[in-house]
Image 1 (cartoon, rainbow, N blue to C red):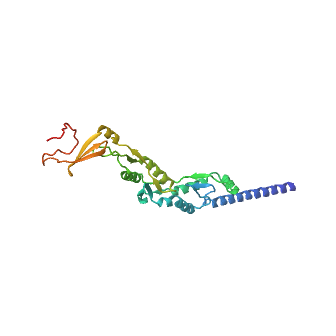
Image 2: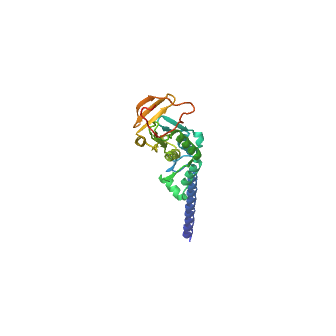
Image 3: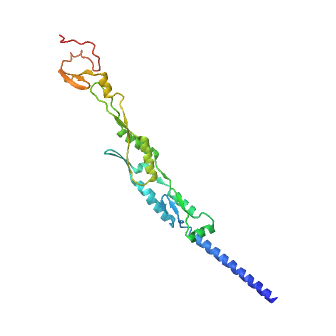
Length: 265
């Protein structure tokens, strides 16, 4: 009976020892896990920045340098040798860095205590990719595109019988420029310069059409008393003429010749 009693006591001591060990291990586990809550887990990337092992302040600083610093440079749009600048202050750019850091810590604490301990002890990673939302003033972008268009656009010129030859115009591809600006501002990195593109606009009346319709015509320059004969839009001859009495002169305009006389009186 004594032996049985002794075995019972040993068993109790063993059980108590195991419980104490387990409690101690649990306390240690909680303590270790708690010590990691102020650092971002391995494998967490925010807006392209690896913030593994960083504290909140360190991650915030790193993201400000990565996301906001490049956005402090003005945006430039070029057309030929012309440069048009969109000031940063008008864009009112903001980045929700705080939310990105919050999500980084949420991802770091994802899962149960045992799973987190296993990941931390074995050197595992979370493998999380978190974007940072960047906002800017869309009205400022729209206004800038309109201003660039007003300076870049050139209307085509119709050919006319007063020796105006037709010429092409060009129009800013404003929708494309808005898309390019949005991409640049969303990414916040890389070149801050965009070379704009235009489309060619054709005249309604071409030089060929005028030449075919008016193969021969006259122009009168009343200031120099000069009559000019044009053939196929090329000057053929010039004559010095009188332009009539004051008050009886023919108004300026385009006229068709109704009557022609050889050597009139």
